[in-house]
Amino acid sequence: MRQTLENGDEDYLECTIKESLRARPVVSYAMRRTMEPFAVGGHTAPAGAYVGTSVVLTHNNPDLYPQPELFRPERFADRRTDTYAWVPFGGGTRRCLGAAFATYEMKVVLRRVLERCELTAPERKPERAKRRFVTFVPSRGAEVVVRRRRAAESSPVAG
Image (cartoon, rainbow, N blue to C red):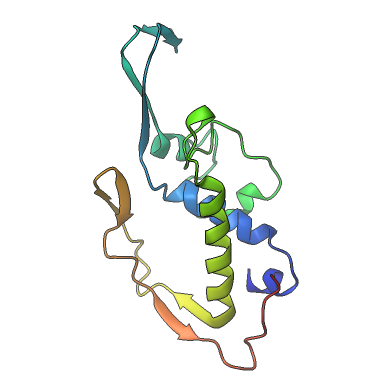
């Protein structure tokens, strides 16, 4: 990814952010209360019922994301993200108001970190997520080994 950033190409960075949010969504589900009877999947929920969708199950559906257990940013390279297949910020009229800003912020921070540091996991075993209120967080606090890039390597990244 660093090489593409140094060449001024942020496409892979954007794919990495999308894949990160697919693999580790911040919220696990979205609930809504029906205002009128609502039909879905051969069932009808009456007005006033609560219906929900699982972000985690959607993002791990192999029909939508082949081999969902693998972290593969390139899965977003050649396709437009389906409105209801990638929902880390919710969807429709109630989509998170801060989604664009959050995504932009992730791009800026990740680009700057990669300019200055080499990041590695302290162990090969993936860190599990744990629930904190309505969100998920890394169970061990997102441990990472940070090494400063050597001066000769650390050319500024465009942007």
